[in-house]
Image 1 (cartoon, rainbow, N blue to C red):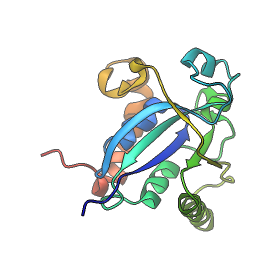
Image 2 (spheres, rainbow, N blue to C red):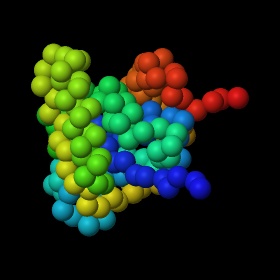
Image 3 (cartoon, rainbow, N blue to C red):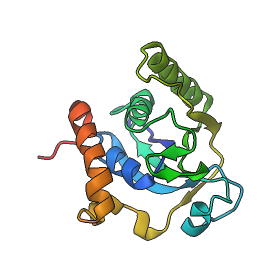
Image 4 (cartoon, helix red, strand yellow):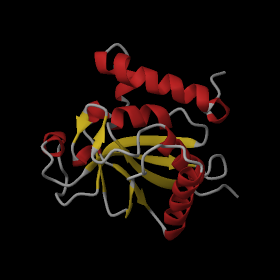
Length: 182
């Protein structure tokens, strides 16, 4: 009997970067850029950028837990952005760029906390991890032009200067978890 798919929702700054990383993983069936954690229904990108809705830029990852575990996804989330900066990733500043995990169940909350505590115990970062863990409430997909942004705009300056180095580093570190290209 096939395993039921699950959802994971992560905010780690710009969703363009995050989507490009998670899309490459074996066991990931879909990645959708969007917004979560705010108070305004159906927010627009312009509202999010204004910082008045309380939403974070996130990706929602549909995955097969028989192929990749939630804990592996959480570890990748932590190791592919800076979880030690409050409301900031690089030059992106504001609550919409916060580091946050929106958990879909108590099991996900426990697994996320366990990964975070392991990384703290291993002293992976010199500064405290400030990533919030919050219950998932609602996800709003971002506008169509944000979906698969990196794949659709590889020559765009932001993709070349910001996303390419992140994706290259990720692919090297997590090569054993990538989708087969053959």
